[in-house]
Length: 461
Image 1: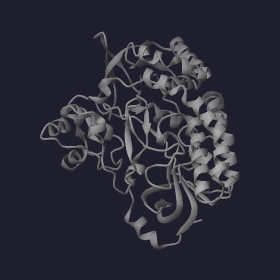
Image 2: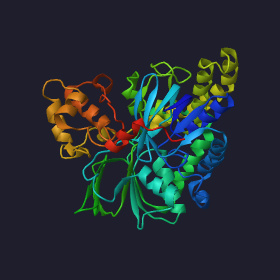
Image 3: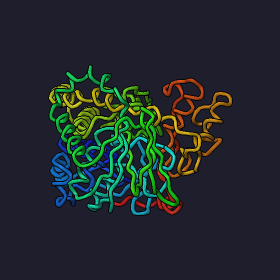
Image 4: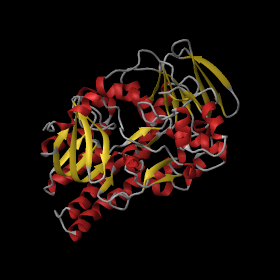
């Protein structure tokens, strides 16, 4: 059994920044991550992808220096390690190399990042339909791009970024279905003055959009999409806000409607969460250092609210400063002084978020799939089944879970939880903040009996 000062879950921007800061304060720190190399989703495979730097862009390349410093810092780093239970105190149950181990720590920082928002629609389970994030993972990990022209449907910066990266890599975009609700820019306009603090990021986004328009047709105001095919996607049907419909050939469809915090680990410890109406998701309630409602448990990075890689690093540093104070490695006064420039930088990074959140708020149809649409992929439960049960009495998500098994599969509700919450809320005329989310129980990830049997063995170094 390993015993240490600080356990960090996740080796993305927040986790690596927190680890580097912890080492500067002389803390014994372990970082566990389920990926084989550091970088998280945003800098995935950054150590191996030098040949793709021109394709992936300078923001991606920035992660290489961070990963190098992380490797050289002296942290105990366990890649390929999955956290499947976290107990107060703290005891973390982790599986690595098909063996389970227990790690004890005085403090924990959850730097688990974000996940793509689930987007159920008719045909979304067909082969050939992926998320934009999944397609980008293939590009980052192996330099792979789809063989033929792809359709991209969605809203937000990531689809635009991937479309540009795909074109740079020699791929083709058959068309871009922009699902951003028409006129939403008006709601975002009041946030523009503050967003101009990040004028470079805004200009970058405009350049992506301009390049895409030059290379592929862009259809705006799309409100509904449907993938059709026998055994895999063959055609794509879409409808726009002005009731125009079209059906086109499609071999590959990539979808994206924003990202949401990965909160399962925090929920498993009963951390207090609150509904964020600006980002249409739940996020843990944390203080200005990132400490959650559970003492000595911190949430850093996009797991505490979507803000991007640079903000994630700064949040990781702030969390570690507070941990260092609690463990006696620095004083309250010294931490306060060190935090001031970090907070100023963080304020600048957060300045653009209200503008982006308002501009790219998901279309209502994302939260109201048609009855025939599969919502829970693991158990093949449809929206109609959930809707019918939600109208009988006043069940919450956990009662729906017990009755249908939605949320009981390998993903543990990561792909259906929010949709269940929104369907229940609509059926009962209740806001999502009142409906709540699934109760998360261990294991957070699938674990085998063989791994459990290995718990008595010493932890691997």
